[in-house]
Length: 393
Image 1 (cartoon, rainbow, N blue to C red):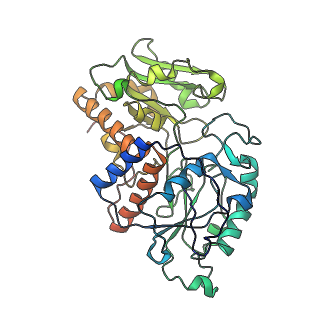
Image 2 (image 1 turned 90 degrees about the horizontal axis):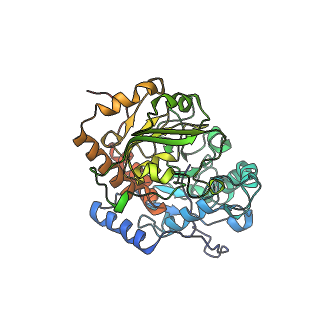
Image 3 (image 1 turned 90 degrees about the vertical axis):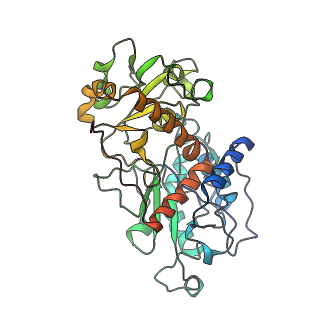
């Protein structure tokens, strides 16, 4: 559910300016820059096209934050001939659930302009029009002199935060590299194409962190936890794991997660997550789960039960160092599998999960930089393979 666009276009310096919501604090920005100085930037450069938010009257809060991150990215170049990646100046994401999970499709609650419904309904035409008339480096069969001027075409990114649906006229026509990014693609259901798509994370809905802001492995109340809705057979089967002591599985009926505004602040989710060694990240209606980043942010080991989910940024992040992937068919054996992991390894994995969250996932800036690292690794041929299910060996 994720990627970006920005503004400051090729021939569009006079375009109307839209004020973007930027929730990144000065401290977070300094942390981002510190990571960049320590690790060094890769060679991938991005170019930000001119925005059309105001004329199209569609812009989600999620997308506006990403846009602000792109504008301040050290990867950005004002020269399209230098760019490898291009961000479109329109909101193709059409996010529904951030920052308020239970906002209505027709509500402007999560939007600067427009609504999730209007954004989604107009998306195919808006994308097609933008690629045809505004994205001057997106060559259409090389027929336009204006477009043909730019030999280095690169990848044009189109985020899809509603990946139950397709974005797709431009992709189906197979005219140019139009790279889709989303949080819920699966390997085996025919909707993930290696090299064309980039799996990206869903921003957390709950604000979590290890107690004291540091992972202290000796101060853990629970062994493994899950709290959420009983809306999928795999979740329903998890009830058998609950022992009422250090393995806590709390399920309820309904569709709205208790991290949302309708459940109040004192539902126990935060207390469970911040006091556990392992947190189950179990699929619901979709393959992806907001709990992945929430588990990592709490300094717990994510235990993923979602067959075929393409984990976010897996090409740039080694999940084998901090996550446990289990087949959904093995949910009843999950506790015994987890208890077989030595305490020393558990501590190292928890520490690594929190580190990866802080350096790759915590802010829009970090997610944008990690996306660029995916392209760095693709160009260098050093991407990590897809994570494998857990093996004791």
